[in-house]
Length: 354
Image (cartoon, rainbow, N blue to C red; front, side):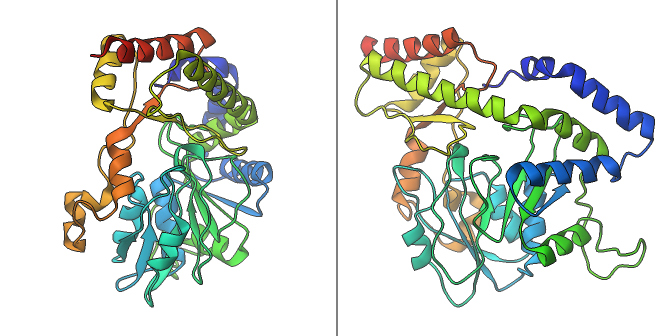
């Protein structure tokens, strides 16, 4: 699904120089590397502030903390997402309220999100799933964008967005890392405070925060890789277009649907909806083709959320997607012949009738 060695090899000299720079400086936490990355990231994404944190999960957590979300509050989001979208709010005592997805985009249905709003709603969290921008609900509460999979997809529209630099992301670190982007100076300052135990100055704690800092080594590696992001994004978009051509030419069952294209899509994943998905995945695995299911279970059916009272059938579009979605390899280092081989194996499965 992702060739980490190939990506690192493509920029190895830049990464080696970045690591050496950190080691030579002796500054391993904070410092010029973190500030430099924050400045360069904000400039590239066209926002006023970027605050480096320890992971995409902690980026969401820091935003919710800075907004004062706590016990008794409600946060609305999609059930088709990675666990951290909901888990970060629940850790603060908030109640998650799910709203179903749009069946075409697989992202939060804005009308459903607005309908789920109540007097205790403190935030709505659209997830830009697989690299496609979600619609932003027109609601009287803060919009927190989960952009963990969509760096570079478009302009910030909410009060803040959470980014993930997990190694397999479109811009990946060599460990866990994340960032918050925002145009709100007060919110940026609050997040910067909270990421370091709420201390200002050192050992003088004016808030209860956490150890949510981005370390200098990850910041330096991300600085080395950031100039390559646009080129890698273009490669992903090119792969997506080629996949569509190959799928159309293969005359696959009409029920097999490639993802809906969009101008800003950055294709963190290329996710098809496939009949007999599990059998197809087994066939591809036997042929040596890696795939992944994002996600095998809708969040409202996870055991840890049983107390919310949701049952099977509560969000039919999300549940249906979990039965049909399958991610095919799309990382920038894939050669064109690999894409052709993937689609060829898909075609063989359906033509064989197995």
